Image 1: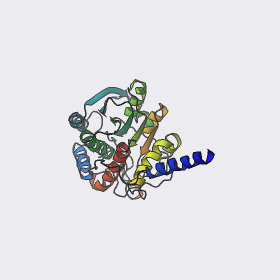
Image 2: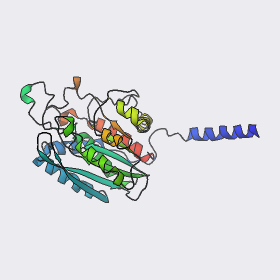
Image 3: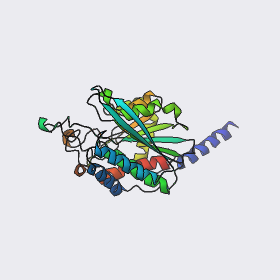
Image 4: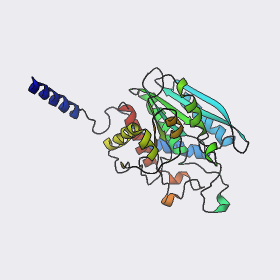
Length: 308
């Protein structure tokens, strides 16, 4: 009987081995990087998306209109924040839920606002110029908006919540940053059904991409990291998703992890040679790649349609 039992285990193990996915999930819709690039250009054309500005209002209206045409459940959470300088900001988190009745759900998020100052510009005269935010803001938002197109046309095997958070990059200090993520984290217990994990997309459009594993994500959301990097491996993108830990980045995933939702950050830490485009007036669409957006979108689509 013992030999029969061992033989049965070997058969089960062999069957499980043959079921390991290789290549894209069959029937998964393809992500359109060119369309995502158009979304980047549209956002930058609105001008700076700083809370309280015309560009911020235009982008909000545009995003909500697009999402309303695609998702059965779109909501806007309006809230305020008083900065350390005494200014009152009116902020908006936008949520689009797909298959809202599904009890198993994941959360994908990106920030849609832009930084008021180019504080990393090498020329002091440029430091008061608002950041255009093609990569830092628009790239993650563009990928989520194009994923909404996929989810509207082809149902995923689970529920997906797309969250566009505001006030991530206001600053200059951390007390006036990550505002939308903190807001969502404070309402996490009210989310029903609550997502099982989250994935943050931030600065995902660099023309020379390398997505290392963010250190804090590796520590507190390693299961999510494994899911994402394995999806990249199945698609042949391991060269762009090296399975090694990089820097620790303070970003929107932190408040969510602190609230008990395992959330990994997907980010290219270096934007341009020597990181020279980050938080500068050079964060423009010509430094963003449709090919990189497509690669990231394909990886996230693979994550979704493989069952997460």
